[in-house]
Image (cartoon, rainbow, N blue to C red; front, side):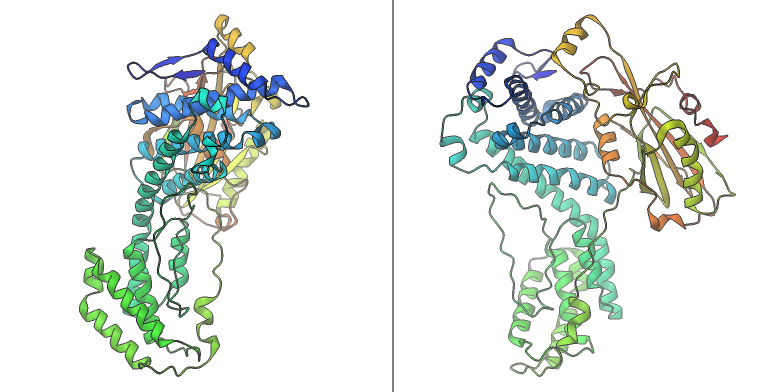
Length: 539
């Protein structure tokens, strides 16, 4: 499927422009290595060129395109790009290949962000995970400001309009979106920083590891230069063709962190190193006050008022007289400066859950099962017996867990499908898209049904949003999951358990079409459970 655009009338075309293909094949055939498969290279070239143009134009006209259409384009191109697996071709075309990948992940991030009605932490973490891939792919394209598009004439680049302008457009778009996400990430952890701040100010409890933990959630390096008796001032970096995967703490988070470090030094009973430099300490205090002068946040102005800052300065002067550095043991900061433990990856099922084809709520579920591990074993039994072994995915959700099955192909009449054809990782075109299939689809409708079960066990019923589950989102969920119930949940006991079941049924009209969620309501949860032979779960 090729999506063609025109400024006056954006129209969707199902087949390629044959004149374009003729020229494209002519251009690229001349560059094929004698040792490589010419037919494979031709196909990969066509696929990559088409994907780049579709995605670049989608990025250009994103704000004017229908959201459903964007979803179809992304799902289709994900499948198409996934077919390019010739290592030699990818290496020889790494700039265009990685740039196209970056376009895809950028658009996926933009789509999730645009469609999100709230930005809870699990949603933001998912957004960041996708956007990280956009940045990584862009950096991997190794585009040089001057050389990439000028060092030699590239007929393919010229034909598909891959040039410095398209690079500048994506570069600007990524930087702009990164800035927007940075603000969302900061707002998410700001309440945690406030809570930790109060412990330091009111109770002299300094949880620096917690500050680091929350900043690391979004890859925000948090300086501990004051504790380390160093003077490090952050200098903003100019935009370039390398985009850092790190985000930045804003002035409010920086002020809270610096205040806590200064207060710790002023009030802690721990002795300090003999070579501690008080000049650096007071320069850091001066920089702290300079940052404070630029801040208009109400919380900061209230808590770090002149009285609080004067008290902090008096405490510092009492413990660190000017031009004196009596000090003492090197182990004084051993607790604070010990390496922090890397945060384990955590996967969450969306809350509220995406809109489903069918759903049911089962209150007072299996009261005789005490722990979540027992509940998991109960659910796994019927599922594995019905062919879902090694096809189960786990997530944190509410105060319990979510369990989903892999996307599976199924028959509406309940007839069995061979295991090797039943489960799929990609639905762009049933994994077998070819030019022959395009030709065949002219004459025959090739319909397919896919579904994913989601079981959520928690104290209360899981809610459902109005945001429709898409194939691309389902695939992303399955990719970012655990293959078993997390250990920390296994012994958890819930006084009352509710089982929420969501069925995501996708209908595919024909080969090459993106499957869409079936919201007809023709099949109930019981119908799906029965056809999958797992209806004993709620009996």
